[in-house]
Image (tube, rainbow, N blue to C red; front, side):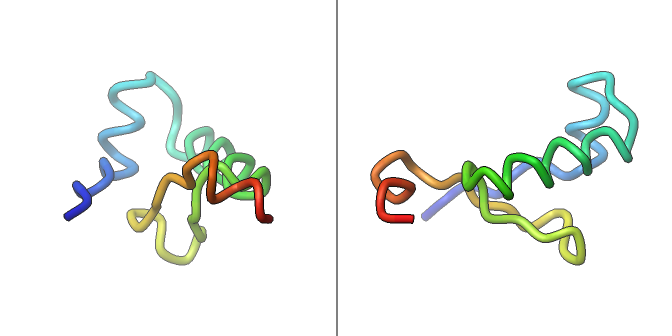
Length: 56
């Protein structure tokens, strides 16, 4: 069972970034295929492991 990812609010507090700043970083990570994430469901994200990325 995979642990739940932190909420956007928790990421903001831990990183010191604004809400929009965190959303922008998550968009970049998703575009570069480090995570699976969509702005429409911001608290649902999954890290893509290195062996999963190679086939993409």
